[in-house]
Image (cartoon, rainbow, N blue to C red):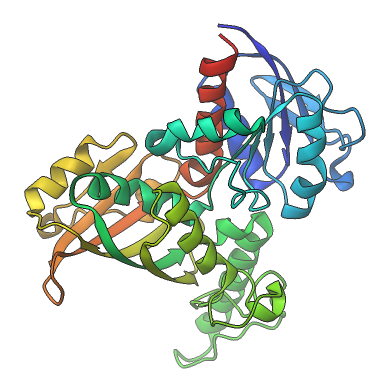
Length: 358
């Protein structure tokens, strides 16, 4: 297998660090690697595969000779620098939302729609995008059900960890929790959960709290107000594109919860065809990347504490929804930094290696 020059943009961020670990774990075939981040990370040491490298900043010509670039940065960074990488002849795997909805750009979960690479080939684009982390784990559970029984309607409510908002968000949860626990140990159990410091990452305190607000609302995104956050809108649009169901009836509610790792999702599905639960279980077990954990009587169901650091998407709590015809409920948990972002990107990179560099 040909070995390559690889670039990682956003190497010092929460996802970037996991991406480096996944590249090393999976022995990605590279002979040279370069790391980029914001100017404040210039010269910062980056450890990879037993060696230490100096982090660089993006500059004209920085993608010359790079075969594959992984972008785990902001939408603004991707908007400015992904075209520059493509112009240099570099294949780009971009985890931002910047290019996800362009018809010529694949939105890929390799286990489900690797054939969408044809979009890039036919258009001459060299950009492949990864979905939002909450979308990835949902479609991993939906796809095998869609294939056999079809999808009429999907309703999803998310329970998203603070790691989805980055390292600073995780620290904010830890700091607020420590402060609150210190207060309640010296005061009555009815003591207020308020902390003395104002939240900086989230719009409200996250410790011992749930916030039904992820992403921007219409006033922040410039779209007409419809009550949906950008995170919810992403899940709707991305699911339709990945599953090739442009008219799928789907709605989402995204909630941030006070956990450090792994997103949970409650998914309610109406299928087009009747099903029985043993067949649903068999279809999920057969889906690559999915692990079924479904024995509630033995207290066996997907948990974030057990899914953290793992590659699988865990599915459980399967049960009929008898309030509608062909109704089904699922509980889905996955490490949002791994399969939801870093692992999915590396899997896309592996697909590019197989297709173009062997």
